[in-house]
Amino acid sequence: MFLYSTIVVASVAVSLATSLLSWAHVVYPPPEVWNYGLPFVWRAVIFVASPMGTTAETVWTWFAFALDVLFFMAIGYLVVTLYQRRHRTTAIASPGMVLSVTYVAFVLWISIEAYLSFCNLRQCA
Image (cartoon, rainbow, N blue to C red):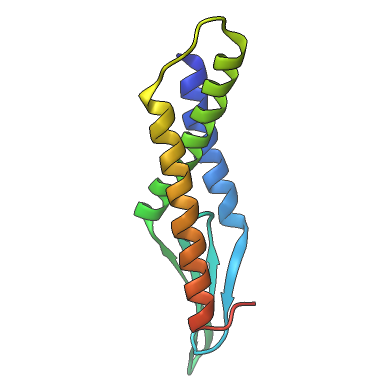
């Protein structure tokens, strides 16, 4: 049980760490936007020009953060299940394994497709 709760804590920590990585920087059309979070953007910093100067506004998307945590939880669950499967003499038949593989592949496909379509519409740095 401790191992599975560790997966949850590690997933939240990795999701929070991805908020330090910028994967898209949009300059044109205004406003300037820096996107953070992998595989889904869940934090955006928007720089808006105003008469008082440039102001920065941070936008948080908690639904995308939850999807990020679920993504990293699925990866952690896959690693643990594969490790257990290799080191046990009896086979582990787990429907959660199939669900985890499907979810990880689906999230990667959606995030890559969203990134490519986003970069086709705007210039990404």
